[in-house]
Length: 332
Ligand code: SF4
Image (cartoon, rainbow, N blue to C red; front, top):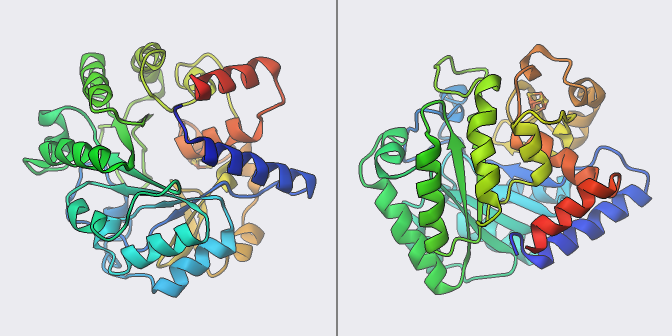
């Protein structure tokens, strides 16, 4: 299975509960960024630019755990920055697991060995390793030699110790379909549980030209879709149809909310209008229908995974064809 059964059942129950209560704008995933500092300086990272003046701010542990309770989303993605340099990362992870939240720890894998001595495998824990290609490409993107080899070594270690491992790959303009295929074959041979491939985010704070233009996506993601038939690629078939330009989707930015040391970031993971003190204030300040219908000029070319896979999840059950495709995708 591409996703853990327990996660899918918990998510399904949670969504059913929210819909029955008549709620429309509820989160599925909390992107928890306890700090923005990192031990790498990747070329495509918007966070280290947007938060350059507050990079070393760290959320107090109680605030990070409190944010998870405030949003009450079943999935918490701990990201950043590099979350493994957050001083309370062990206590935060264990606290979220104790709260029965599905934790996805997004990491560059450099500090993993120390962490797994303190946090044992759990049905609620999954590692999400950043890997943007094969050795030459990945080490160039992260601007340090040896990081690709460290990722491969850590994936092998995590798998041998019984952890669930996913990878997260950004596809840039220069990423070739041959390299995507080579990387996916390698990850399959390492028995990786899930692979997410997304077009590079064009952060409003970055001006470089490394991102895929809308018209460049179909070719690369058609190949990803073919590969998804035989490999554990977790992009849903509906999101892939959107990436290859065969359908349009509305956005659901409220399904993936972001909390960092500055507050609740809105309106979405990608663009920032402001940071709000409470989750309630984020909701009160944001016209979700405006962003759902992509009226903001910054939404024009956006195909961000978190906004559109949220729509796919919320729409489950509305179309027989899509629902069947999703079930087949997850149980295959
Ligand atoms: S379309 Fe993109 S930029 Fe606009 S709200 Fe959705 S995720 Fe954010």
